[in-house]
Length: 297
Image (tube, rainbow, N blue to C red; front, top):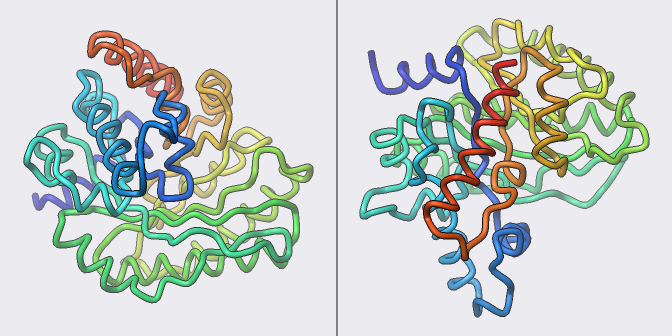
């Protein structure tokens, strides 16, 4: 079995969850502050990115961050381009930890229109996908944002996401399609109903050689995405934590039996740069156990 086939089988059918370690330029200071590293502790982008790489490396090398509970990890491009213990990050993830590497490919969100934020243009995407293949990346992720139940806006978001998914698949990678619905939207439940309908239409139009992973906000109506999870073109449906606390996100996820987690902030909740390795491993291990248990519920 090829490496890609082994990774595909693991993502499609194994127990566990996908860790999101892909905070980018805009969200990095917030992620560092949560970890106890304040803006005064670093100067300029280079030091900021070095600090966040140290945090991500510490998570990846932690005792509990292994294939036993973690299926995959989504990386920021700088993390993919960096080494951990002298080994390229994606290579170390798969060879040393048994964790399938993914890459965040979007360049952020466009301004709001029709109650949504589309992806910004990605003119260099083909080159990035080529580099991802060279680095041993299995799949990609791009995030849009839905703020209200606007049918035209949601239709535009899903159409754009699936256009990108086709481009990713043509490059030999598996796309994670992520049309997030904001957890504080006043029309969250209605937006999710529209979103589910649009996703199913696009899934039905995919050719048989294209598979996707869906990354979605945990729905207000439990089980809303079960039909999508069972679709022949879908490898897995994963849930984002969306700003919920770890406990709340896990409780809501456990009510959706065909979704597994792909948490970022909830994974790193309670971790601090000043912790000893033993304290850090224990705290991360607790989060991983909670998220794993919710994913297999």
